Image (cartoon, rainbow, N blue to C red; front, side, top):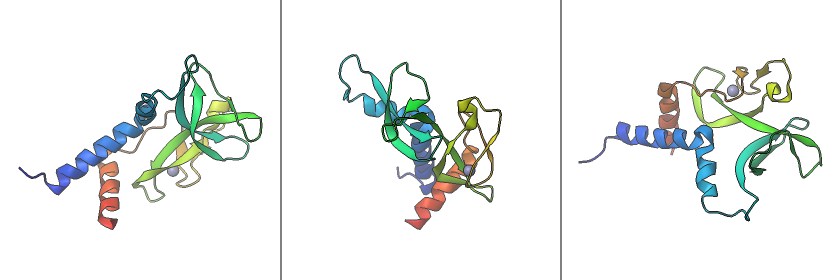
Length: 143
Ligand SMILES: [Zn+2]
């Protein structure tokens, strides 16, 4: 029985969201066992609070807490990069904007996404599934 286009899209979205959520993708990558014994790391996207530079797949030692040291500047200014999937016109997108959330640096100031202007918080929630699905369909249509 052939899958409908809609069913296939839902499967793609579910897989993508599952991979993005809670760094599941990173855990999967680490199963390969690249790290030497006693140096358990996991990879995640981090952002420099001084420069705004994003480092993808930065290896974080198990049990260590941020701010982590930026090897390029020698400063402890790396924080978890939060993902914002919103667009300015209230839709979702599949490629998130990575944002430094000031709360991670113990600031009371709220953080607004530089792309859409929405508030971004630690463990930032994704837009509703229906919007994520629409975004995925848009991407498919462009292919
Ligand atoms: Zn945004």
